[in-house]
Every structure is written in structure tokens, then in C-alpha cells.
Length: 323
Length: 280
Image (cartoon, rainbow over all chains, first blue to last red; front, side):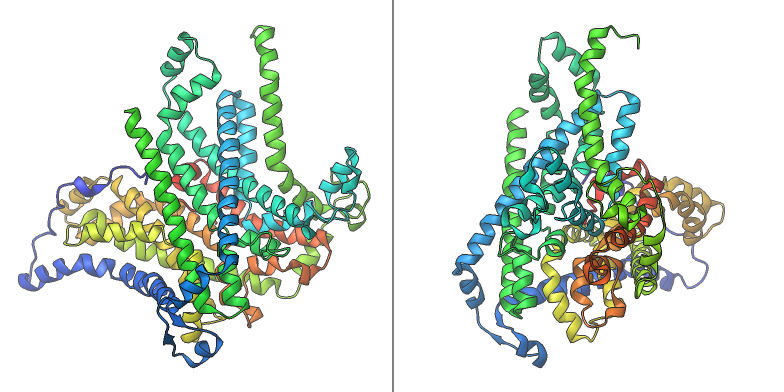
């Protein structure tokens, strides 16, 4: 998306040095070269991406359970799976929760990320380096390492969070079992996702901030603009495409987030942290209803695509108005 | 120092906020490292200690001697390096075809790669499982390597194409004038110039594959010896029980390669991540 202008406009590269023998065969071989070079990519994409996508769509219109998985053949049932999924109130609860989960996480990430980026810009050199190192450290933490760390931080017996809250006077948190309650498990997962995602947003937005010419800020200051006005009228409009990009990426990552939820709570307690990807996996792997799981997966992708198109269109329409 | 005091005073809240952000971002990782180094008595104390007063390597020893630790490391390294090398070679060919040659269908191919980059991998867990089962590749590292190869391939093609475009084609041409073959010119002139790009691209792929959990958890079920580190670590409760020292030691060891990669990449991280959008 942000890669530099590519070689598309480059004039055609000169042909290979004059062939010595059998010119006709060399010519035909030269014409085949590009296709030989892209063949592995095409084969990989066909077998490892297109085929699974097709298989997912196929399963979602079949009756495909444990027996079919073992036997290998399945009956077509049309859109029955989709009707069943869409008619299930659970699906709508989970969809609503997924949208809320995505909006909450993305909102917090963008808010904290923007504030952190503005702060980095205002900081002195040494302090900025320290904060950026901290952010990179967070960023480098693998997802699964971060989940184990958060499980340890929020442990009921020797967890440091409970100790700190108790020491601060919130004695009800002594030995509080965070992972046993719906609300607190949801909260920990949000904290984990936000903690992991803020560095990317903050550092990317900071990178964008450094490209804004100082004259713009000087002009805004001379016109008597305050901090908020400067952000609203100078920083945000200039960086709108970057904000749109980062927001979209965060929406994608939060929406399809699976590993953290699965490792910490498997969607529980009850269904408190079941989002659409977790729901699809539960239906398929735990209940062996591969057909319904596939239908949920397909619907998940459609909902995400719709949300992104909406988000991007809104962003670009606003940009069009600003021009 | 030379600022008037009012200015310095105004900077106090800013610096306090910076310290808060620094503490919030670094503390969990610090807590992991320090827990791994504390003796169990200090970990299970009613009042936690925030400095390693009695550092010990006991937990690292427990982690390293845990059942299958070596096997899981080997599996993770095999799968990750195999996938990254495959996608590097395959993507280099494709990037050369796209960046240096003219042919029919080039635009369609580029578009396909861009679309593939946005593939919703999490939604393909179920069909991947069924396909792996049909082809007898369930519980095999080969299947996992192939999946990681495909998840990193589109990003690798796009990034390498960008790096290749930055190497002037004239350099190759002059080598050809001097009597090099087309392939020879590419190998002797462009490839060395491309080396930093190849390195950083493969390191991004390395991070993606090293950290991957969902497919490793779905495609390796019965054969516990074929598990990779993230899946093993996610089930630490079965391995270490409530031994948090050992769990944090294992997490630290798992994180170490990624940290090294980040140190190598340094400031390339931000630009590369936006260009390719690599993340969990």
C-alpha cells in the first residue's frame, strides 16, 4: 500500500544478448521465462489459498459433519446451513459482541496510539528514545508470550495486579479470580489486545507526524490555534490517509483476533468472550459441525469486508470534501 | 537547561506521561524476565519484590529440561526457516518476473498477489483442517510449513518487488554490455544489492511464522511430538502447573529470537510493517 512507485512505468528491459545458436528456440524460451518464474507462486496460491477458500464455500453448502469427514463424500443442502446460522439467536449475540469488541479495542488503540505519537513528538531526544524502546519491546513480544505474561500478572493468588490493588486500598481484589468472571475476563483480553497493538499505531503515526512540515505548525501558532485546534485543523487532515490505514488494519486485527482469546478463555466464561472467529472454531472443532463452522467463517469475512468498505469509503469521502 | 523555568515546569506533566507510557509498555516484559530469575520463595511471597535480589537460573533449567523442549524448538525452527526460505526463493523469482520482464498478464498477477495479501487466514482454519485430513498431512510439519509459506508469500513478493525496483536496471544492462548473461548480471550485480532487502523481508516472515498459533493448534492434534513452541507454551499449565517461574523462563526463551530480529531490523520495522502489514 505504501510501497514506492514501482517498475510499472519503466521502459521494457532490453532483450537478452544476441543468441548464438538456434534463434527460434531461444526466442520461444525467452517468452516462456516470466511464466516459469511465476509458476511456483501461482501453484502455491492455487493449492494453499484458492482451494481452501473454495473448500470452505463448498462445505458451507453441504451437510458436512463427523461422518462426512471420515467417509469423504457429502450431500448438497443449498443454503440450509446459512439459514440455520442466521436463524440462531446465538449468532446475533456473538456478532454484536464482535462488533463491540472491535469498536472498543480499535477506539482505545487509536486514542492511546495518537496521544502517544503526539507525546513522542513533543518529548526531548533522550526521553523519546526511552519510550520508543519500551514500545518496541512490547511490539516484539510474541502473542503467546504476552498471553502467558498477562495470565501471570492477573493471577488470583500471587499476581502482582491483585497485590497492587490491595495495597492501594481496594481490598476486595485480594485473591480476586479475574478469569472466573465474565466482565473481568473481557477486560483482561481488551487490556492485552490494546497493550499489544498500541506500539504499532503509536510508532506508525509518529513516523507520519515527523513528515509534517514545521511551517504548518508555525502558521497555526501565529493564527492563535490551541493544541486541540492544531490537531483538528493541521495534523489530522494532513495525516488522514495514514489514520485511515492504521484504523483499518487495527479493525482487521481486532475483528479476526483468535489466538489470545482461545488461549486465555476459549471464549468463556460462558460465552463472555466468544467472538465470531472463536464461535466458528468452537462449532467446527468442538461440535464437529464443519458445515456450520464454514458458514460462520464465510459470514465473518463478509461482515469484516462490509465494515472495512464502510470505513474506507467514509474516510475517502471526507478526504474528497476537504480537497 | 537553558530554558526559562516556566518552560521546564510545563514539561513536567509531559515527562510524567512519558514515564507512565514507558512503565506500562515495559513492565509486563520486565515482570516476565524478573519472575524467571527469582527463586520460587520470592515468587510466592505475599509482598512481591521488584528487583532480582537473589537471581537464579533454576527456572531456566526446569524449562529446558521439560519434556520435549528440544523437540519443540527444533520443530519451530524447522517449520519457520523452511517456510521463510521457500517463500524467499519463490518470491524472488516472481519479483524478478514482475520487476524486470514484460509479459502478458503481469498486471493481473500483481493484482492477485495484492488480493492474496489480504487473505482472511483465520477463516480458513476449518477447510485447512479438512484438507490436511484428506491428504494425510494432519499432524505433519510439512503441512504447517506449507501453510506458513503461503501466509508469508504475498507479503514477500510485494516487498521484494519494492526493493528490486530500487536497484537501477541500468546496472544490470551495463554488466550485460560487458559480456554477462542476463542471469549472470542479475546474480552478480542485483542480488548483492538486494541482500539487505532479502534479509529484512525474511526476518518479517520469520516473526510471523515463529509466533503463529492458530494453525499450529488446529493442524497438529494427535502427534504431540510435532507441536511447535507457541502451542506448547499455551498449554504451560499442563507442563509446569503453577510453576510461574518456569513458565516465565520458557516465555523468555521463546521471545529471545524475536527480540534479536527486532534489534537487527531496528528502524526498518515501522516502514516495513505498514508496507506489508505483518502482525499476528
